[in-house]
Image (cartoon, rainbow over all chains, first blue to last red; front, top):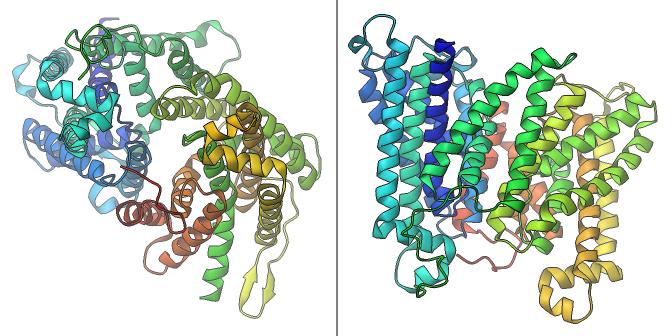
Length: 305
Length: 286
């Protein structure tokens, strides 16, 4: 039971990081990143391939964060002449192409066979047998650090600029701020967090292959942000917990419902996730959390921008 | 070379119907429907049920399936998109992703993950000199051309077509002139649902019927629609043909499994240089 709990918590921590990565992009900035799973996958592969080459895991993790941030920024630049709606299809196209490249360029990524034997960071620090708990501590530490950074961001002038861009890009432009600049920086930030989350995924499973990464990761992340409340970092962490526990818990349904195979159950689960996403957008668009209090932009009683 | 061109045209025609459907809904509703890939798969599976399950001939099953799915498309709009219509387009994008996942898993639940094929007789390809043409390719050619002709006539010469163009052009002005937006929207979903379902059958004929089939078509369909200028439905057809031929010609220099990368590169180049499309007018704003 303990082992199971530790494993689930680690998965939750990684999912929370993915949700937190989407929060500055979609929650605060209103930018749709459907290709999120591609950036996550890129992070995992950069970290895995460098670590397998013998680089210390923490260094590979840093490279993965920088690399994914840079690639994210570039993908935001592609939409330089367009409204933010186009980010959705550009990022999705990027992610699908990346998955295709990783599956086929076997000389670099070993294709569908996957990369094996990825070391975890700080392996030597924990006594034998404590490796999983040590890794969980590391993942939770990452969540706390990212949370603190995003909270600071949300309260900073730049955070207000990001939210203002979401609410009315025209006004921001008229005030002489660069909307594209905001978009690129927000994407780079989310990219760095996705690089971190992807690296942790690679370290945790110590084996990655292209089939682990699909659009469903994107849907979970949107789900986490919608449930948690767009822009609310605390809400996103809480909803990542709830979501993963719900998904894990529903695994046990197989024992109770006769005639239900694993693939049918998976289909029902994903069907419910899709329906819940739409239903939440309709009935509870602000989610269950709240944006940090410094949001005066949405407050009717405060003077407008 | 001529063979590649023919293959490219057929590949383009496969994209033409969903691209037309996508830009039709976009031009009236101003939101890009990411569920269109799942619509395509759903249509293909509905027709599979008619064709293999009930033993109907394929043309009959396809007709019935297209009509049935057109009604589903209106129902999905009522359930999922209509309540969100007055919110920002970005919310609708995310909702359509939710619809996409839900529909795809309805298919997986009932039909499983294994690929299936329609009950059609296997025939030898026809030869015209050096050029080979499959019966499937011929079916695609004829079906798509006929459907396009019907849509074009509806769009150009009927009252409904004028209403659709009016709402696409200026919804407020159209409303003032007494055009019911809700009715036009319902018709748009009917047409785009039927077109997408039909294209699902053609894709299934060309390859296999499987739950992922629509998803792999998502990127090319969007690219084709953007190529045409996304708010311009008939130009989407030209965009689809251009993309189909480009993809096919690219196989001369790139491995076949990298088709999607060709598509992506075309889209990126287009967004950077001519975001209003090859054939569209310059309406896109930053």
